[in-house]
Length: 181
Image 1 (cartoon, one colour):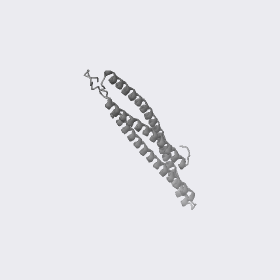
Image 2 (tube, rainbow, N blue to C red):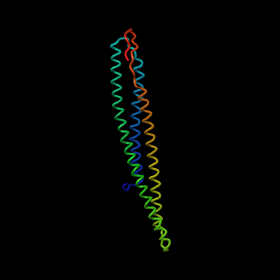
Image 3 (cartoon, helix red, strand yellow):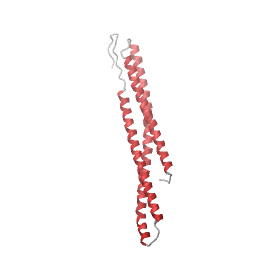
Image 4 (spheres, rainbow, N blue to C red):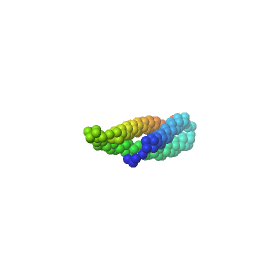
């Protein structure tokens, strides 16, 4: 991971969270639209004429196809954000491992400095900086994991709502014609 200021890292993560929230919100909006569409077309079930019934069925199929296309696009956007978050998490985990290795290298130097009577303040300061960076990156990794879990849960709920809102057109055949399924 390149050297970045903590504020820049936080800003990057916040931007990815916003992108994820936007994509997740888009999924939610589409699921709600699917639910409202289903409710509206259930009111039209069993039109008085076969032509009206067929027109309703065509409209339902067109709207469902449109919702499916837009939903798939929104899911792809969300997947891209999740991949970016995963990449950041892997970068942070790599940086944490590198910082831990650096800490292990600094510990013997600190002991040697004390043994020879040298001021080890600079080494201790470097150790503290590495510990602080590890803590920060660990916090960011946990934040990413939390964000990923939230986005996945929201997407799952939206997916369920969308699937539950699928309209199965069935004529009530109010004029006595045979039923369609």
